[in-house]
Image: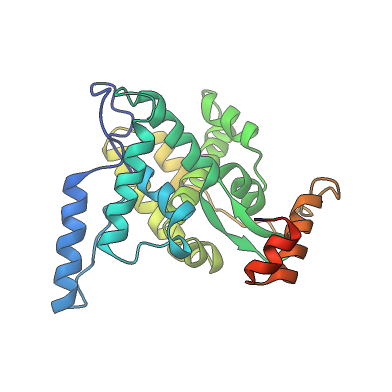
Length: 250
C-alpha cells in the first residue's frame, strides 16, 4: 500500500471507490499534456491497484496507451468494486490479494512466465512464501535473525517494486532494482512503516538471484484436452464462419 495505493484499505471510508484517485489521475493527465511540448516531462502514473489489475488483465498488451483507455479501466474497476453494494471493504481486500497473486512479473529462461508474488519470490530468490511470512512475523532477537528478517523484507520489497518494469528490473544485473529498493527502505523508515533496525538490516542484505531453477510444473493430459481441442478446431476453421458452424463451435 505504501508503494502503490496508500488509501486502498482506509477503514475510515468504507464506501471509498478504490479505482479512482483523482489527484494522481489529474497529475498523469498534466504530465501527458506537458510531454507533448517537452518529452523530458514525465507523464506520471494515475493508476490504483484496481486499475492496474484491469490493465494487465484486459487492456491491449497489458498497457495503457491513452487517456481513453485509462478512463475505461477506471469505469470497469469501479463497477467491480461496487457489484456487492456501496460498502467496498471486502472488494478492496480482494483487490490487494489479487494484485499480489496475479501481477505478471517477467519470465525466466528455462522456466517461463512468472505470475504473482508467491511464485516470483520462489523462482527468483528460492524463498518459500510460508517461510517468508514466518520470518517477517517472528520477533528478531539475535543478529542472525535480524539479518535474515532484513534479507527477506528486502526480497519482498524489491519484487513489489520490480512490478513497475519487470523485464528491466529483473532482467539486468540487479543494480537498478537495488538502488530503487534502498531508496524505498529509507522512505519506509522515515514514514514509520518499519523501524531503523529492520531498515539497516535490509539495507545491508545482499540479494542474489537463484541459479538453479525448479522444473516447470507438468500439465495433465486430461486437464489439457479441452484446450487442445479448441486449438485444433481453431486451426482448422481459421476465420471461416462456415467451418466454425460445421464443427459445432457456434
